[in-house]
Each structure stands twice: as C-alpha cells, then as structure tokens.
Length: 262
Ligand code: CO8
Image (cartoon, rainbow, N blue to C red; front, side, top):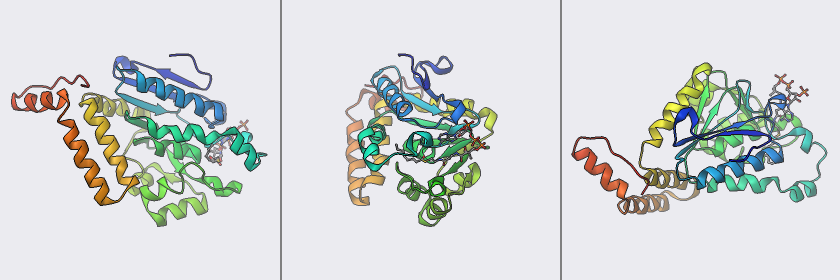
C-alpha cells in the first residue's frame, strides 16, 4: 500500500490479517474532507477491496474528530461551476461500490460531510463523546453528500428535519436511540470494541457477508417486494459457495467452520 498524505492505512490491523484500518489524518483541521483526502480514501478502499486477504475495513478519525465536514476553506468562494469542474462528488459516488463491510469508528465530531461519510459506511460504532450533525444550514448551505437522504432514512423525517434545519448536533446516545448508530461504547475503548466487531464479521463466510451487505443495502434502493426478491436470489446464490457447505457441515459436526471466501 502506498503512502498517502491525508490518511494512514494499516493492513493486518492489530495483527489480524483480515482487517484493515483507514485513519483520516488532518488533525489540525479536524479531518476536514478535502478533495485530496476523499480521493485517497477511495483509492485506499479500492486497493483493500482488491486485496484477497482483507475481509473487513474500519474507517476512523481521531479522539477529537471523525471528520468535521467538507473543507470549508476549499469551498467558501467556489461557484457551482467550480464544484462541477472539481468533481468532488465523483469520489463520493464510488463509496457504494465497495463490497466489503466498512465499519465507521467515530469519536468526536462527525459533522456535515463527516456525518455523511460515516453514513456511507455499513455500521457506525460511536465513542460516548461522539457528536453527529448536519450543520451546513449554519453556514448558508445544505448537505450535499447524503445528509438529507441517508439521515432521513436512518432516523426518520422529523428527527432528520430537526437536525438539518437547526444544524444542532446529536450526542452519541441520541444518535444510537434514533437508529443512526449501531452501538455506543466508552470513547477510550472505541477502537478495541470496533476491532472485536470486525473480528466477528471477518470470521463469517466472506461471500455470504458480501451478499448480505448487498441485500441489506437493497432495502434502501427498492420496494419491499423487489428487495425480498433480491434477498431470496442472494440466499440461493450462497448455496453455490463452498463456504455455505462448510458452514452447515461444521454446524452439524459440532466444530468451528473454516471459511475460505469461496
Ligand atoms: N473545514 C475546514 N476547517 C475546519 C473545519 C471544516 N469543516 N472544521 C474545523 N476546521 C478547522 C478550524 O477552522 C480550526 O482551524 P484553525 O485552528 O486554523 O483556526 C480547526 O479546524 C479547529 O476547529 P475549531 O477551532 O473551530 O474547534 P472547536 O472545537 O472550537 O469547534 C467545531 C469544533 C464545532 C467542529 C467547529 O470547528 C465547526 O463548527 N466546524 C465546522 C463544521 C461544519 O460546518 N461542517 C460542515 C461543513 S460543509 C459540509 O460538510 C458539506 C458537505 C457536502 C458534501 C461534500 C461533497 C464534496
């Protein structure tokens, strides 16, 4: 893996060969999501996607901030045409193409694009000091990378409206209660707790994990009827994998399954 300027990438995270960590690393600006940083995140994700050893990716920031939003300095004087030509959204559009599970481990601020980046991941685990919000309204704009869409699907219209129209932040516990966050843990143990979740997922059959992720995401993309159909087809598809045979035989033989991702 090459060296990046704005992120740190660790394969074999905590000596686990199936887990990788991407850490946003612009601490002086609370990990503001510059175009370059987002390009690097996407490049690293695709490199880990292609790495056969990696089964789960953790995305994190630091104790103070997961990310405090898009880089305001970079945007302040931009015209719509600058935004189009800069094509910042190209990187964001690539995030859903990653088939491996991505867990956002959030301490501190996850605001604006930072909240949107966390919501682009598959699971959000938050430290108890984490704060989520879409504060764009306070600086005269609105969310641009899913804040009005993913947040509304995650926490419902009324709470999303409150967040988007006031710009006020939610605590980690409010975010958990609303359904944005899967689990809140003590801030100091965030990375260890996230690693434990990643370990569990990395022990599951990788093909089934990908098909399950795809099927859950379909719940957001389509009608219930079509989603059910999609799920059923992915269910059938798992029966063409070696790992399904291994998993069910291991259960019947009362032993641990050994999954190969085949
Ligand atoms: N962009 C650039 N710099 C930032 C950002 C940001 N989003 N957030 C913080 N910083 C910088 C500050 O300017 C400051 O720099 P300096 O030390 O040079 O003055 C440094 O980080 C530390 O910040 P503060 O001194 O403000 O720290 P506080 O603890 O006092 O406050 C806050 C922390 C509350 C998080 C505060 O920094 C803040 O309100 N930040 C802005 C939050 C925000 O408005 N985010 C939304 C940005 S717009 C957006 O995300 C739109 C996304 C659209 C999708 C993008 C697609 C391309």
